[in-house]
Length: 382
Image 1: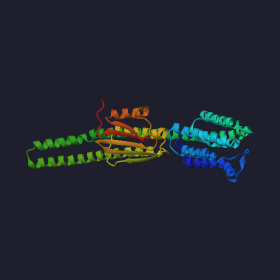
Image 2: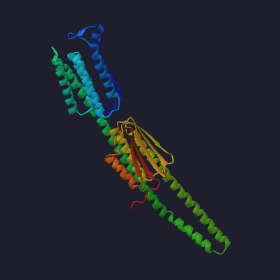
Image 3: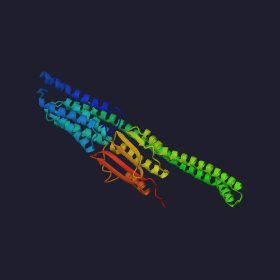
Image 4: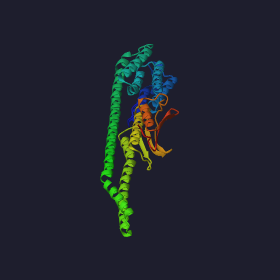
């Protein structure tokens, strides 16, 4: 369940479930210690075997990050344990354990499936109790069933809240990405303006430089030629200083844009925790920054929706004469490399369009990693 609902109070839910498990088993434990009976039957020590199995299954299902089929298998083990406990102690109070299972089911699936599961587990206990004398089925059908429904509805409300939070986080990421794209477009327009300024405003200075050199080459008097050469040198120095200032400003802007965009993406996601590392020597073009940003966004989406990760590491570095982005999470690795989804296919196509490569891997079903590489110089796209 921890993987299903990424909330700070997951451990509170787990402790509460184990508390209910202990509380519902306490009357049986008490009767066993004092040598009493329940429904006229002595409590067998074998009863504690399915009781312990259920406790372990509850802990594993709520704490461990497990594939769906394993998670549902653990829920089935819990139900089987309750049935076994009811066979050994045919008391309607055994149905109280179903409340713990109902809570986990409500957290794990949609309302219709959760209600179906609750109906099945109640029928299983009713069928087990029907084999005993004075089964007190009314208790099962009223108090226990009502508690199960209450817990299912409460879990569904929390589940919907978590899904809404994830949807809002996704929308927030898309908005921030759109803002980054707009900012990139604005910077492109600014570069175009600067290029026009270089041509229009400094064109006359370059023309003057050429004239001074032309005059110096045709003047016969040494003094006059030296004056024109000095003026040409001064013009050249001034123009070179201006060019260096513009280039330095543009390079500094490019160096910071990707880092700032990734940081903004990381701050927009409440869970998992995103760790961003960008090497100081990374310099990318607008197209490269956009492609890497989209890769990071897809990695975040995968970590949130599929991997159920707690942490995501985004690292950008200069490697193999290019720029490399490695996105690794500590969640479940799905077979994306064999059957990539639309997002991963789009990511691969975007990188290959710029001459790059994409590798996807998962080690032993864990640590899903996206490895994106772009050449330092993007090939010309016709």
